[in-house]
Length: 318
Image (cartoon, rainbow, N blue to C red):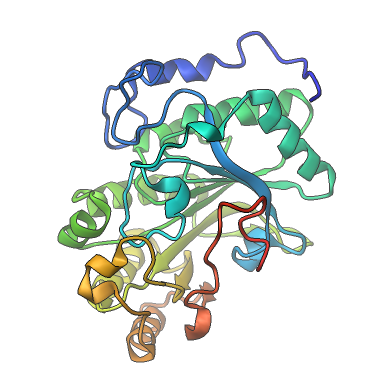
């Protein structure tokens, strides 16, 4: 493993974790201690995978893929999470702890291959670690496009501090019905929290998504929404909120890839894929609202994007 010449204070952002309030849970936990907060994450670099991912939207994966950093744990606990192997907070993720130099070595290896876009997946509870990694890469002379790939349950104050560091926001907008967010993600306040977070991202980026000559996004915002079976009214409300409270000019990735994995089988409505008629209804409303910029998945996408984090590259089959 190479020894990187880094400033002595490179780990300073981690001090925020001694009284952790970096996500909307605001647990006030000392993540340096054995007693953790809601996400059960510590103060280290708990990363399940650093890999080339080619299964994102075309403007994110581009022609060669994106270097994605997959953090473990999560500040949501979605019962249908496709990444449950790394996001379930009841699982012991201690084996995924990595020293900073190993994190940098793996990222630099991919950047040197010609990929100049770096995504942080589920970073809302690991923002200090994200800052350390980006600052360290900058010190080493690497300045890739930084993608903040989040579940949308983000703290506005933390997002403000990321202005100028993040180039592309890639947030989910999951719910506008509090009872659904409580039942399926253990976060009743998700609708109001996510709307505030999206407003801050929109303030920073506006509605244009800038793309370079190779097809990669280099600045802007792209909102993802996963349509859940049996809950088209929630999807319609999410799209209406984006159009009316943010802008109909924003880029949207409407996803049909829902698959009943993890604990979805405990809920009758979630035991099957999205039906074509349900998805068509949401697509139709999307067009009526003028949300014509972005991407729409084909209805056959269900089950096509399931990762296996037991593999070196969880998305190798895609």
